Every structure is written in C-alpha cells, then in structure tokens.
Image 1: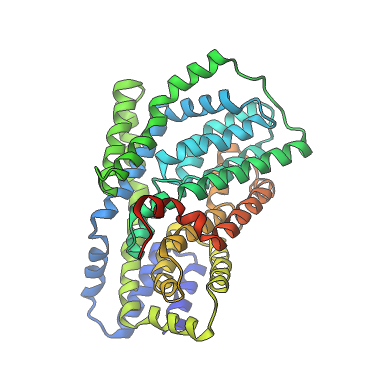
Image 2: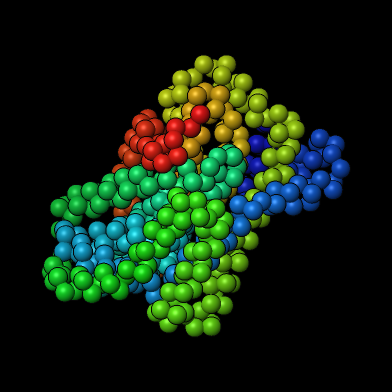
Length: 427
C-alpha cells in the first residue's frame, strides 16, 4: 500500500497537478481501494480543518501583509541601515539584519522575500550591487522568517505532531539567530572576494532618529512573545493580537494604510490562507487512510528493524527532506512527512520539538535550492534577474545554512535550551 500511494502521488505531481489536488487525488484513490464510503472524503477534509489552532495561520499572514502595507518594513530597513550599513558589504548585511527584525512579524519566508525584499533589492541595486547578488542575499535572508517566532511552519508542525506551540516558538529563537550569523559571515567573506561597495557610517543623531521611527515595529515581537510567555494569550489569540497591533500602527499611529491597502491585504491573505488550508484539508484525507492502514506504524517498525542510531536516522531524514525540498514547497513537505515521521522520532528517542526545528530549517534551505526554490523565483522576479544567475549567487548561502542545519541536527541542546529553560525539561 505504501508503494501504491507513494507512486500515485509522484505520478500526479509529475503530470503537473497542483500539490493540493495531487494529495487529494491520492486520498480519493486510497478511499476507493479501502472500500470506504465516498462521503468520508468531505467528512475528513472538514474534520482536518476543525482546529482552533489553525486560525492562527491566516491571522499571522494578515499581520504580515498589514505590516507591508503600513510602511513598517521601510522603517525597519532604515533602522538596520543606520546600524550596520557601514560594515563591509553594508547593504547585504542590512538585508540580513532587517530579515531578523521582520521575521517576528511575518512568520513567512515568502512574505519576507516579497515585502521587505522589494525594498532591500531596490536599495542594493541603487547602491551598486548587481541584481542577481541582491536577489540571492534577499532569498537567503528570507529563510530566517519561518524559524524565528511567530512561525506559520511551527504552528503547522505543532498541530500535526501534537506538541506545544510555545515550545516550538522558543526553540526557533537560537537557530534563527545562528542562521543570521552564518549568513552575515558569508556576506563578509564574499565581500572580501568581490570588493562590494560600502557606505559612510551613520551619525548618532541619524541612528537615534531611525530607532525611534522603528521602535513601535520592533516592539511587536516583544509584545507577542511576552504575551505567550506570561500565558496571557494562546497561539491563536496571539495572532489576533498581532493583527490588532498591526492595524493600530498602520491606521492610527503611522496613518499610512488606506482603505484600498486594507482590501489588498485581505485579498492577499485570503488567497495565501486558502492555498495552505486546502493542502491541510486534502492531506487529512490521506492521513486518515494512512492511520487506518497503519502506514506510520509500518514505517516505524521498518526503521526500528534497521537498528539505526538517532544520529544516522536524522542524517537519512535530512537527505530525504533536502531532496523533497528541491521539488515541493514547504507546506506540502511538512504536511506529507511530519505525520509519518513524528511517531518514528519518538520510537528512536528523538525529541519531537528538536525534530520539528530540524525539519523547518531543512525546508528553508529547500527554498533557495533548485529546481523549485520558491524564494529564488520570487526574488528573481522582483529583481528582474535571470533565475540561473540568482541561483548561482545563492549557493554559498545555501552552504552556510547547511552547516547550521548540521549543528542543529547533532547538538539538540542548541535547539532545546530555551524551551527547557522556560517550560522545564519535557518528560
């Protein structure tokens, strides 16, 4: 059965069906093979979306879109430019630092690449950087967003693997900062070889002015993480608070959001959220059949029979995920793979929160890896550059992220330090 369902999914994807349609097609095939009534298809799709936690996904998407529409992204970029713009390859460093600041507001790599990325690429082009280089740095820095909380990928994994969203959020902080440091080190190393331009150091007055302009936006992650840590909000309530905060900044404080901007943000959120939810609903049909046929248990038994050590198991999984990341998008991989592998990780003695962060970072590397590399497509279009040129420039940054992935994979304490410190060691 595993080969039948897997082969059917690969076949559907190879003929060009959208991911959601391909997954639903496999679920329908499985329903017929199992002899289950057709009504179960719709029933399982509805049941798969019947979760309070999933409401956080469109709300966080809406918050990010509001942040883009309100001019907050430009304030963040200006502040980062004032602080680190004078470093070697200053605007490339600003690109990474800005993504760290914006990551706590968007939760989405593609939102970062499309929103803040448009400002970053334009500024880098005007400063003398080539379009492919500017686009590559933007794509690489955008991968930080889904690792640092709040993270849509972390919410999805927590929902699938039945782990704490709070632990997932805190587990992403240190890995996200490690990714940023690795990218900044790569920018510095490449700057020495490429002789990239530098800008004069900003004065203290300019830095203070940029800080005060950006302060309301910079407080957003503090409000969100603080609310979660104190127990004032659940993850879903947190996303609603984030939307209210974004509306307050854009409409009442900065007064830069018009009615048409709100409508555009709503429309973009609806399209993005619908795409994610359709995949979730379709995957739940297949997940129900997989559970009925005991596919996860069969895979777990097969893995245990191989007597793989946790280290070897993680190596194999990382290789498989990297290969999947070259042909599928992040949400599809998470929804397809996590329900199968989450029980296996427990069986081999791997902490599910640790494994979740490893999965997410791995999929972020896939965003800048050909042939799909969705972030590469987005930034190449914004920069009006050839995709191959952008891909070639992005390879050193992909290598730096792979190094971070290796560290996170084999030193779980790096991932689990903060959640264990705040919530206590998981039993």
